[in-house]
Image 1 (tube, rainbow, N blue to C red):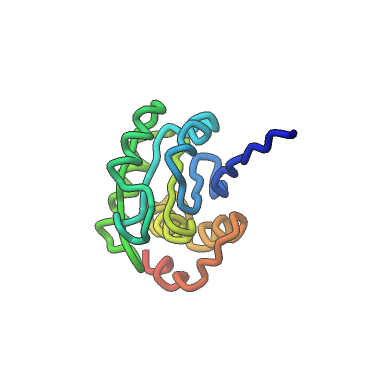
Image 2 (image 1 turned 90 degrees about the vertical axis):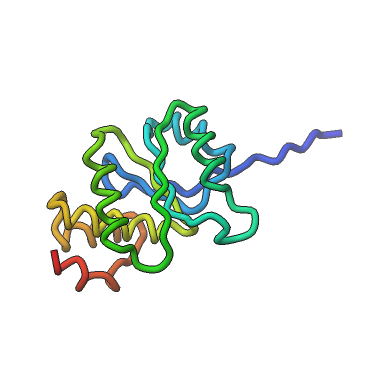
Length: 149
């Protein structure tokens, strides 16, 4: 008899820049691998209770800390407000170490990164859209918002 073991597949981590990556929803079991990839800060962009069974912010923070990573929750639905954009700018300003952000699909995290990066002057609107596209996210729907900064 052959023993069958189910191998868990890690979340789809997509590098947006050398120091910033996004992913769809993760589980507690993913945190050791995320830390092992060199990330030192986890940003959660999902509001608690968005879908049944998702990892809560409290549990995500515990898992991040247990794996020697910092944690920041910047939850939002739809388009982020300037409060959330400024919150991510603070995170980006706080470290030069690699940052990992996640939400349900990764799009929300990538959108927030683009807005924060353009507002802070780290990226131009065109470079942010290109980096997002290279990571697999079409953010053309926020091009006009990016061009307001």
